[in-house]
Image: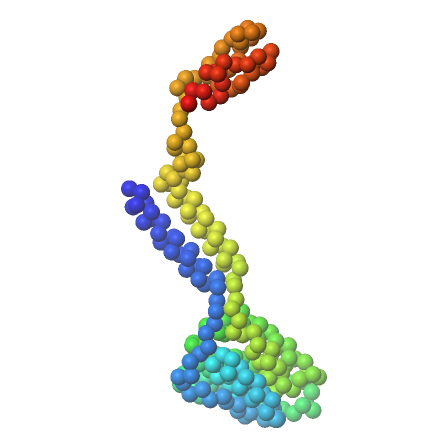
Length: 260
């Protein structure tokens, strides 16, 4: 019967162990079994010298096995034909790459824009292949997105090209480090502790029962006797001297005497 009850708890225990596994994440470098070309296409002519950018993209590829790509376009390339830049970026990815191992950054700027024009109605979007998910997790991409957005906004410090390369440079050293999801880890520990406790209670496992399994029960209930010296009473098996006069209690009435 106990065995059948343990089988009932087995799925819950396996579930908590799967949570333990998910709480610790160690990314693995992508194998080079695809066309891992690094693409930089400046259709909008806003990148200028791309040597620094290419070096950053190559360093990221060497660390992760993911091939990054940067394509700049003009707003008219997608506005009016797509609901947003994300859908256009998806089509660009599909048309450029036959694999799921690239990470595409699309930057869009107004048609014929020049830095002397003042305000720039720019957009950008990232599109990653499914095989990159082990490395480019949600937390990683969120951090990169925030960094790139900040750099692209700081036009007095960065050009479009340097903003993208700096964002990759900041990400590359840490992207392959193991990470622990502490919230999930503590949650799984709490669930496992609850399941084990519930199982013990339902099955009837009691640590105290095991501890006192070999204890000998008292043969009699609490018994009082009169002191041979003063006549006052004392409780058998609780003291070695009379609590009233201090006279010694007979050996057979002292604690533990009935178990020897």
